[in-house]
Image (cartoon, rainbow, N blue to C red; front, side, top):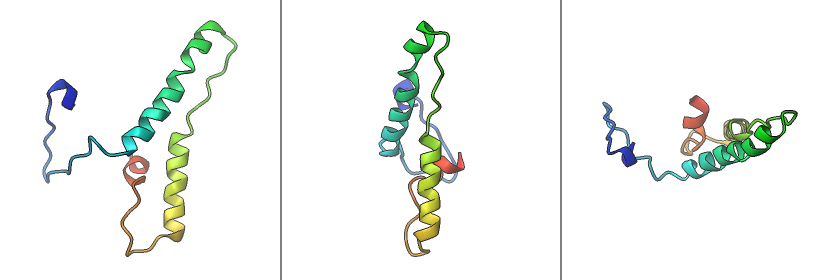
Length: 83
């Protein structure tokens, strides 16, 4: 949104997230999926390997549920798991 000169507005105001490190994890997951495209185009018998990104985030969240406490801050994976 920022690169398109757009500023989303919400009520209540959300904190800025454009530099959150979870974007790096998402970029890596997208890159792993996109890197398969050349072999999929060249070989019609090649199989697409689904991303494990969401499974890994859900697992991290489950670990937090099992071992977290109400005094610790919520896990960073929570927004991705909820989406």
